[in-house]
Length: 228
Picture (cartoon, rainbow, N blue to C red):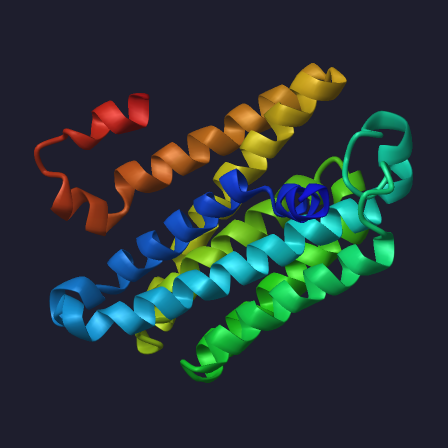
């Protein structure tokens, strides 16, 4: 039971749920909910959710694999540094989830498969190198989220070409959140905080002034959500 709980802790299920939200948002953006009945969409939606769960879980697990030495000092209670789960077992566990994510995406076709592989590469790049860079790290984290949004959009592959630019919003938004969260933990500089504020402003402006948003939110109720 302890080992089972250790594997579950490696996955961080509470974080994995957020990746499903990204994909569902992408599916909504694609317009498939209005074009096709739910009975037809059930299997594709489930497969895309399984894909993102596999990819995101793999990314989180490999984060602990790459941080094993650092966690011995800073988080000795984590499953790998505590000795509950070996580094080799965790690597295999993460690889299995990546395989599940890519296999589920592969059932949709080339566009979805390429996005899934790109997400895996972005996750591994972040875990291995980018996370230690003050600018590239947050942008790489945002890239993972932006690609994940497009993974949902790819439920209708032709829609990816139409809506690819929307991935820039989560890329910039998540980058700004990551910069601020680093400051909370490590005591970041004011320059990084100001830069994050600029990124926030770009995100808000892109939502306010993009033509689709103007058409949909003519009542201006969306301003309340932007304010929050």
